[in-house]
Amino acid sequence: AAAAARASASSPLEALTSVWGYDAFRGEQAEIIETVSRGGDALVLMPTGGGKSLCYQIPALVREGTGVVISPLIALMHDQVDALEQLGVRAAYLNSTQSVDERRTVERQLLDGELDLLYIAPERLPAAAGLLDRARVALFAIDEAHCVAQWGHDFRPDYLRLSMLHERWPDVPRIALTATATEGTREEIVRNLDLDDARVFVSSFDRPNIQYRIAPKQDAKGQLLQIIDAEHPGEAGIVYCLSRASVERTAEWLAGRGITALPYHAGLPAETRSRNQARFLREDGVVMVATIAFGMGIDKPDVRFVAHLDLPKSIEGYYQETGRAGRDGLPSTAWLAYGLQDVVQQRRMIADGEGDAQRKRAQTLHLDAMLALCETVRCRRQQLLGYFGQASEPCGNCDTCLAPPEAFDGTVPAQKLMSTIVRLQRERGQQFGAGHLVDILLGRETERTVKLRHTELTTFGIGTELGDQEWRGVVRQLLAQGLLEVQGEYGVLALTPAAGEVLGGRREVLLRRETERTRAPRRARAK
Ligand code: ADP
Ligand code: ZN
Image (cartoon, rainbow, N blue to C red; front, side, top):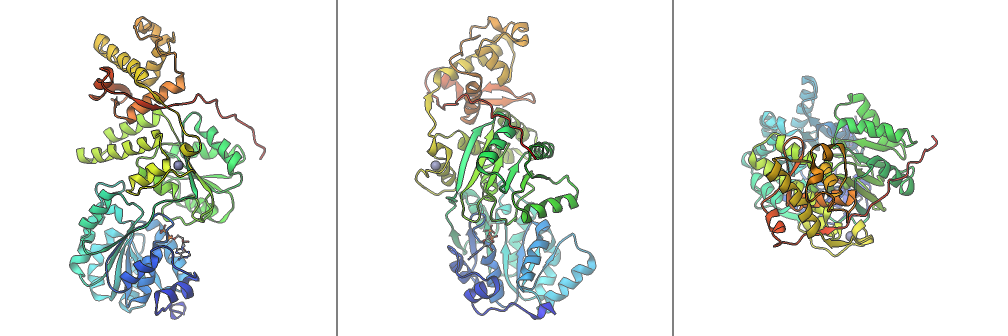
């Protein structure tokens, strides 16, 4: 039957050309494949779209036995196996979605030497160990290897058990792959997977065809619509939102304005999800509005833009999500809108979330790095690559390179804001969020400023040199710089110990100028 047409290959290059139909290896693929085919261990750090899969699929064909792939993406195993089967590669998977009969069939195929590749979910590995003992294993591939890092952004406890691979099958080569390259994560992968002897391959993380842009959030949907209309009409894109509710709202809103926008989040029925995903993959110009549940393993080359309407939790996440744009190498846009409310919300989510103190500290550092990227006056790409430990020059293809932001000495505005916070707290024992503080600084006689007699404060109306949006920018940047912090469930602002240096005139504050932008005009679009 189909299995008879086994994809055999005597050399990696022959596999590449005869099975995949490609002419040449990309980047470091050839060397990685050579290393693993010869029985060596490898750690591969390669950006999304870089071509990681071939790095273990080809050695699995070249070596005798079955390549066992540990992958956390159960939802994608079926598609991955389907795609391989279409190429004539004998592939199967074992995961919790299968019936006992289905599993038995796969186990028999494995033991009979009828599989080139077997995908296994990490939680199934302990149960499958006895089976693997009896099979001929060509190699172990550990996909999404950053999941083993507790310090990382995507930790999965099941991954810690993967250290058993080396202990139990010391002669089987292992290849760990990830698109996350920070030093800390890398060290943890090596340590937790016992990869000290592995050759490490680090590809450049630069995606030169992606234009990175980060804008203050005003009317995020309207801003997005303007970008789609002006730069990407009728093109495929992914729009990320934090919550399921905002996914649905945004998809509906865009659809009402003539955009083919579909929702995707884990709360939708499975059929709706797979129908929307199929449309996104097959039709032209579909905009997928999704939570981060969408995208892992999605291989669509012509995604022209990725937009974030809410602040991502980490640079790793942001990089991975924006990396889904422009896999074909053509110009693409990564656009992020973020506002003060994002910062407040994320800080609160960390505080109220699960996990011990160390976990929360890690999350806070991830968020701080993300905020620093948002508020930088440097080239975004330089900052992004620097985060992954790669030095570079200003890129000429990001918003700060194209329109350099003005940096200004924000010490005085910072002092005005801080002393307002201090006065209210010391003299009246009151704490407030940004909106009310800005009202005081701008001297607005609102119901609240009047009723609380904040009109009598000495700082009332002393901040008219800046506008409303500019003040919000100041608050955001002071939060990003660790001079202010958000407290309690209502998001009230408080000073950090470091703020004392600013108030005392011993530290200057450099800020990025926030221009007062008018709202993106709302245009009605004909269907
Ligand atoms: P990653 O897992 O690193 O995100 P993939 O393995 O999914 O990337 O590869 C991304 C795309 O590039 C896929 O469509 C793949 O078939 C293609 N690709 C990989 N290697 C090559 C190559 N040497 N030549 C041409 N296309 C390739
Ligand atoms: Zn740049």
